[in-house]
Image (cartoon, rainbow, N blue to C red; front, side, top):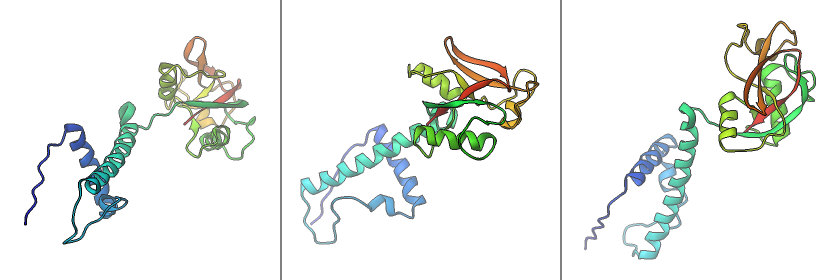
Length: 195
């Protein structure tokens, strides 16, 4: 006895299957079969319910993969977060007002992980703050943000957030009016955190 099953797959499902297949290859094939509610061996009888249960399980897992892929490719291929909180005010360059140890970008990230209670939290980038504004997420204050580029006088974000000298500058993000500004590194603002 032979059973033939014929069905059409939508373009969305085809894309999802491609993502799932790539994931299966990366994980040694275990993703493709692990976690389905029903497994079959030669001679087992099939029912519509057991097949539907497996397809539902796979569809849910594919939807998760699609959501992750969409997040990873948003905003030109970078994961884009949004505002999740602000630190206490600190001098940008040396981050001396922060309660955590470390220096520069790493110190700001450690503070944001504490502020937002998330291991992936970090100092906001300009793109994340623009997304925050577009989503109308309220921010409690203006503060330091990472532009990732040279600022007004050709200095790079307070030399990587390591100097509080007023001869260097960095970016702050304003909440009224919304948008970036450049200020010198001796000013006091909180670090804006995104996740």
